[in-house]
Amino acid sequence: MSTAVTLNASHQTLSRASAWARRAPLLPALIFMIIVTQLPFVATLVISFVRWNALYPNDIGFGWFTNYAAVFTDAAMLKSVITTVVLTVAVVLVSLILGLIIAILLDRAFWGRGFVRTIMIAPFLIVPVAAALVWKHAIFNPSYGLLNGTLTWIWGAFGHASSAPQPDWVSSQPLGAIIAALVWQWTPFMMLILLAGLQGRPLDVIEAARIDGADEWQIFRHMTLPHLRQYLELAALLGCIYLVQNFDAVFTITSGGLGTANLPYTIYQTFFEAHDYGQASAAGVVVVIGSMIVATFVLRTVSSLLREEKR
Image (cartoon, rainbow, N blue to C red; front, side, top):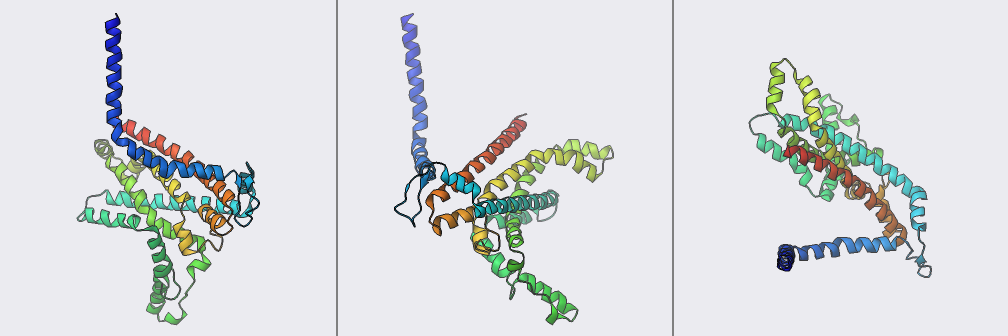
């Protein structure tokens, strides 16, 4: 009996040793990730409870939840939350619709399909600041931008080039300008996820539906769309996570002016211009918590997709 117990204990010790031997190469990466991600977040969490404004160095101390109360009662912060919601919802919805249309078109067989797919993904790979600069100067500029140049060409075709409208797009439609730039950049991302979902459709079932007399709209409505539901959810949730944190387009195109300041830009202003480190940290923690809530839904959607793939 004692020999069996000794052997069992020895086996467990060896199992633990082998498990740690397999995990040991990952420890440096784990430690690095903790230092880079978790320690700054813990520091931000601590500062969020501190009354700390660099303009008042003699008035620093624990304020507990005063910074969070200021976040949820400050008029500029609340307006930036509304702007963030409008910006995120508009970009995600338009990108999803356009991405679905493009994915359906690219799912068909045609010559050069691989090249076209690669070109369609390109906007998502461009550096966000560079993409925003292209839209601000090459497309929206009232003097030499593509939009006003197109209007001049159309009016010129009818002999009225001098009377062509030349609106300042960023000044007249600031939020719309940001939404257009972000839709252009995020539509390929949505298209890529939805195209992957289309590739997983049961083609034999669809072919049987065609033989039974179903037209393309019926197949799309009753078969393709239900199959893509979870992929649509995944694309929307991932888009929400990243777009809620978008800073580049707002900073580059409008500098947060004309009512376009979203939550990340307002946090930037609170930290670097108002020098209120405590309130900026509290707002940052709120954004992180919101992103984590959305990320939880993303993980559930991914898990359900993986379970269906195993079936």
